[in-house]
Image (cartoon, rainbow, N blue to C red; front, side):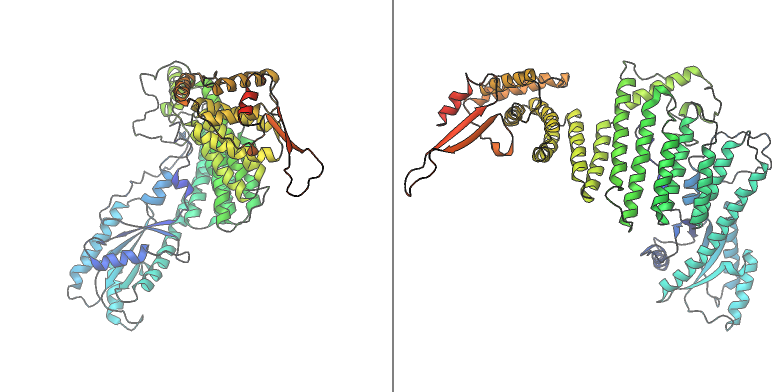
Length: 629
């Protein structure tokens, strides 16, 4: 729950499309039926109507329709939105069921087949009992039909079939299986789309009709629920302007709900869902400034709605997801043609998401590191395997009271969430978000922001004990900070890099970072430099250096063992270090001994070396003298 809980459900993030079920097609064993199905679902270009097709058996069991409520007088809602509602209307309850049946107008067994077709239609209607789903019939025929009015037999039999199946003339179609199959299919699906639009219009009116029965004292949750449903049906109807209007109303209503510690997560969850829909539609309508304004309003309204102090890491996780989702929406809009600018691009939202993930990690370390074992009864399990309503706690589903119904269960549930949080790979989440931000800042030519975030990534890899990747990132960034003479920043990065090199027992890297931290660019205090210098001397004498301060205590013993192995194999091995890429502790300058020289006369140079060290005299100069210096 702690890991996947914050992911937005796929049914919220997809583009809602009218759901049309096709029955009577044997797409496995019948080549004609397979060709028809392929024509419906293959090569669905942007100019095709937005319909989601699914082939189902004729006796398919659709979700049962609950008895319609005639009064809300004693009804107390248990939550805002059921977790299965969006998926139900996207994938389970069709706007239209189309029965395909092979029948030509001149079929010699017309009467029997008409009766069979009517029976199949009745089976479909029975399985949809109580729902407003439309039913249509498509006759698959071998011959191309004559123009309307010219085939009297066809007109007569079509009327008889409609009467037998209790269909209107607009719900009976003919599909000749000829060379022009795709053209006929496109005409068919346009007609299906009109039927689906009528169904969603009816559903919107049905939900709106409930409003007169509601009161603001006990039905606050229903006001939000109904506005969300109307907006979602409007999206299915492809009426995005009205959908945006109803989502905005739902968003205002969700913040009018009486908020307390026990329902804060549900309110924030629904606010996040509705905000996502509003921002997505604003980008879709090419009004990015409206999307940005809505998102800022959303963050301002929600950033202080923390909820239970013992679960503060949840709020940080939720805030991180809000920024990440908006960054993804922004990025998606840019790929579809929106123009972003250097000061307003998705990178800032990924960066803020990473900051909240870092907050989550810190809070989890404070709140979730106790020695408690997992509770004996698993409060996070539910009988159905999932939640009934979005944003509710598994151990008290359907309760809207201010005080939890069972204080002991509440305590156990919070403990279970804290223990679950320990298993979350925080560093992985942070690194992924920072990586997304870096890619955006690189794209929009923001080199300093890119470097800053790469340092954070390197530090996060260090905390995750992936010292190789940490060093690679930090080493890359140090070049920029040397060039721009950010000595304080360079020193801080070098200090982290030195810890990585120590914990990896990387001898060459360790020597390089020591040399640079002892140099004139380093802002370390003299006592810190003295300690590093002594460690450097130990390494050059094939001795194990002391551990760097603030190194992870659990990794130090492993590092010491690695160093012992390295030192035992070192012997008199020489290392070549290209110091022109660094700012080491040795300064060098050359001087001509004479202002001019004759041609072919040997030129003599004086080379001056200075070591910025406290203890250099007794060891380094003999080393340099051996090199002829």
